[in-house]
Length: 193
Image 1: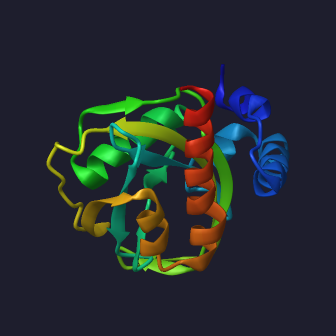
Image 2: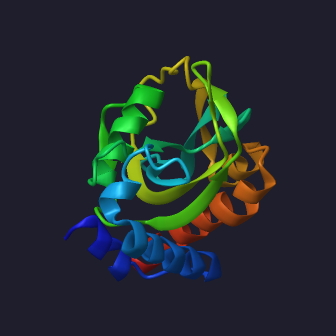
Image 3: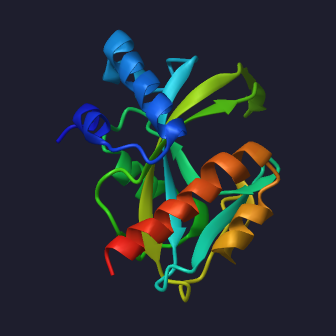
């Protein structure tokens, strides 16, 4: 199933996901998926994130993101790649050093449209834009050593799920995204255990 079909078939968890799914599908219809896969679309482009949990699913992996000056999930730009699960896995490895990663689900775990304020990257100013984000649920070993990616983060650490939410200094992410991801995680394991 291609990415557009995956998004169409995705069952939203809450009102934020209902609205973001509508907007995302409208953008895909208007602009075309290929147009949204690269940063050449400077207004909105696809990204992939990972909610990385440990083996007993009680902890979440977070990175201290240099740009946002906050603890956050791991992920990055599609950069032309329509397999966003592969993008999420690659980004987790690059940003944390972890290599033993196992998707708990191969399908989309969460959808969100994220605002990114204008900023400089490698000496070039990037205007404010949207990240059309797809999130995947991934399991990793807490025993594997962690490393940072100095151009993107300064720390990587495991947090208990509620502590991961509290560690973020971005209120919107705390209330709308990370809390939702923890709720979805708990709901998923209640249904599947």
